[in-house]
Length: 209
Ligand code: URA
Image 1 (tube, protein in one colour):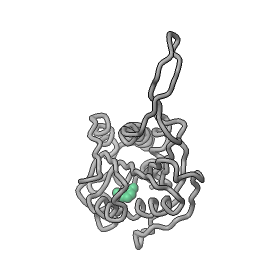
Image 2 (cartoon, protein in one colour):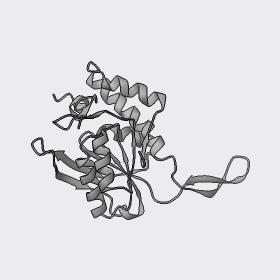
Image 3 (cartoon, protein in one colour):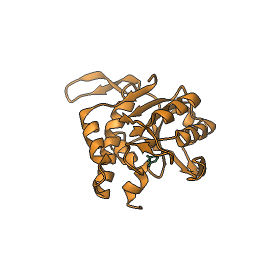
């Protein structure tokens, strides 16, 4: 699928399998999601532009590469996006964070915004939206809509699992937003859950079921 990168690194795939297992504890699930967050951040940022800067090693001056431009923004969709945020921040500690509070109305599966707080200069930064489950695509579409409205221009999407239906809907709305995911599963069920999936990511992270 154009614009979609499936991160097939063995560590990611192994950790994802552990997360899918029904008996994986809340503690392990949270830890694994954080670890996969770091590994996905590595892939999502692979093509960030570099610039040569002058530095001094203990032995001599040299031109060395550093990230160009303003700091990244990670934009977790509350609440389950928080599960990948710390892993991503471990890798990019200077990144800024935009919190996007959206929940899925269980009756209509539509999104309702309840919180939004982002850096003012989104237009100058690469924004990486984080949501473990790209299921119907509605939440991801609404989050990107909201970030665009707030000025963002360069947006990427990082998730753990995606459904084929959600991906094609998302790309239908936001073709310019590239997606990184650890896997594309079979399909959605009637309640908008990904099959085979891993269940409700938020509930499994926080033990709320
Ligand atoms: N959200 C989840 O947490 N799991 C799904 O399968 C779909 C949406």
